[in-house]
Structures are given as structure tokens and as C-alpha cells.
Length: 297
Image (cartoon, rainbow, N blue to C red):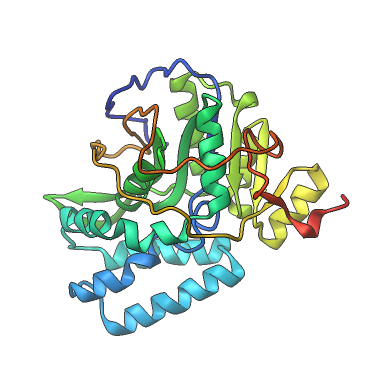
């Protein structure tokens, strides 16, 4: 486990004064697609990948939407992405993501997820995104959505370029360990915290907190949620008021699992949506529907 090394921007990494946090997976939990594969067309236009790789990425995107992220698939994605990125200019990738964020990611953010994010913020909770996708993609998305920090995969960089090595893979138990370590530094009480995910690969994260919630779960996770009486949420709506990238970009430390984003009390780039009943999550909107497959449990 790599030690956490967080660069603070506007708040202290040692403690935010809050004891409750909500940890959100990103792909198929906050957004309806793979955040990594979403930028494949932009990489192609700039000559970073071939047309064949774009087509394979489109197929992988479809498979991801229909079948989710199995352990085997996630391991393949890690190996393929790290190999593909070898030699790329890291600053160029960061610029591609920033420039395309509103158009590539914004329209695919689940409306129900936005409502939950806003609900947690209104309730005084820290909101964090914990994702297997790369830090260069996750951090700007987190800033756009008002998250206070992200825990994401880190690719090794030397002399401004990716080496092809993975410094930290935010996946499975390693992701949960990163969350646990970060929570200890921030002073969160994990028994009071929330976690949201769609995938069985995030079971260690869901088991870590006192309030696990599953979102559009894969078959294996749905089975466990039923057995443990965990709330199951069905997200299906995207679109809504336009999202814009945050004007202040978070600084990126060397090789941390977590990056602290600016503390913001109001998020003008995210329009607050009406809150509904407090369950299945704090200030959850009535638009967050229980999954029909679990009704009557």
C-alpha cells in the first residue's frame, strides 16, 4: 500500500471538521459510461490512437454498459491502457480531458446521482469519488461535480510522460484500503459513512461503511444486496442542466491515491435539484427509484 500524500487546496487534509463522507464509484454509478473509453474519439483526432483502437473502444463501451465490469475485464483494461499510454505527454492528456469534459462527460451524468451528490453536500457531508479510472480523468470530473477529493488510479510519469507502469491501481481491495486510509486522515467515522457502487468488484468498499448503497448493480452484487438488505437504487436518467468544468483546477501531487480538491460551499456549475425523502440516502430525491428487481424484498 502506497502512503497517502495529499496536496491541500483550501482545506486541511488532516481533518475537515466533518465525520461523515459519501464515497461514490464513478463509471455506471455517477455516469452511464466508462469515463476512460469516453475520450477515445478525442485521442484518435489527435493521433494518439488508431481507428481500429477507437472501434475496439466503442465495442468495449457497449460491453461495459450491458455486462458491467468483471474482474477479468478490469484487469485487461488496466494492462491495455497502461501499455497504450506509454510515451504520451501527461499534460496533453490533462488538457484533452479539461477541454472535452462538459461535452464528453456532462451529458452522461445520471440525474439521480447529481441529486444524491447535492443531498450529501446539503447535509454537510464530504463527497469523494473513488474510481478505477485514471486520476487525470477523475480529478476534473470530481471538481466539476463538487467533490472534495478523489481516489483514482495513478499511472507513473517520468519527465512529463507516462512510462507504461501503474503506480497505484484503485481497484477492489486496494481501492477500499485507500478509502480507509484517507478516512483515517480526515477523521471520518466509517460507521456513519455512505458508499455507492454498481459493481461486485467494489464489495470491499461497500463493506467498509455503515451505509452501503448499490446502484444499477451487476448480478453478483444484486444477489449480495438482497441477502444483506442493502438499498438498491435504479439510475436511468441523464442530461439535465448543463455541467461546466470547475474554474479552479486541483493541483496533482506526485503519486498519491487521493487528491484533495478545493473546499466549496456552493457549486454554481451544478444546479441543485429538489430533495425528497431521506432514504435510501440523505436528501435523496424522489427521482432516485428503488430498483424494481428488489421491490417487495
